[in-house]
Image 1 (tube, one colour):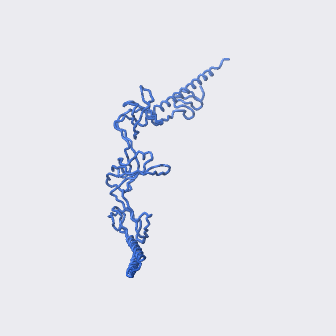
Image 2: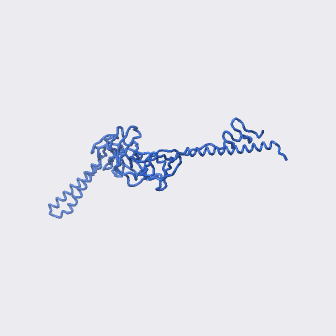
Image 3: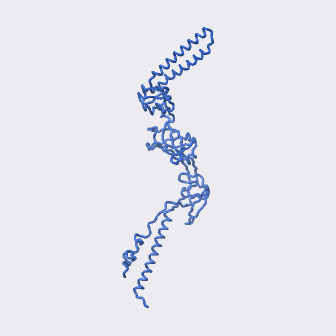
Length: 371
């Protein structure tokens, strides 16, 4: 039976359409793969120079010498002689509490001492045993000394020279002599400043006393100072599962307008190698103690094992395996292509048109399934 001519035409057309679809899919898939490969890598040269490793941390400025002044005797505050910001000398009177009760205790203690001394005199005149009388005198003398300390404790004096940073009370309030309190007046020597910072546990192991540091101020863009690591906390602090160590840095020089409490950034150079052969650290692939790079040789990418030295902030020292000038491959962020099936299941610029036809640029395809 002879098939109608239209059947052969439609069959041939279907083959062409199917072949075109396969060709389009293959072409776009290949293009997408090529874009992903070339777009996710670049090459850089092996270079020679200085490799530096630093530890950075955020911190704040504080006084290197502080003290709190606490009354020796509890009582009602009758006078405060300083304000926050005042500069005081060691021994300066800061505040006073009512000494009525303390003075009464002193007067009573003195009277008891006088009576004990009289009893001792009588015992000596009678040529009798004076041991009890002598003990009473000794006890009374100690009571007088304690009472005198109580009177002295009603006057609060500066334990050191410096600047008043806090006054924790007001006239008429009660002042306590407890050593557990924060202190009635807080004093800091603002001429001796340091930086307190929290350093990640991995970085803290690289620090040691005496290392040089650079300090920059967040509020003072042009301010920079040199510092040294003065101490590292022996115990860690854990907060939100993050382990850090407290580190103090002594400031070698203090820029103008620096104040206690300002936030700073600290950078410590913990390693440096001069005239080192190095590569961008992103070029390295490390598995345990094995380190490899991908080298471009005659247009081909070849893996090569290398020996590394100092791992710097941006670059890594190469002790063997590479020479200056060679090109190594660096992996960058992957490129995601949008090539693929267009809405409706077609291909861009030549997908299947509604109705099942193949529509190419310029409308050369068949639509609607007709001739």
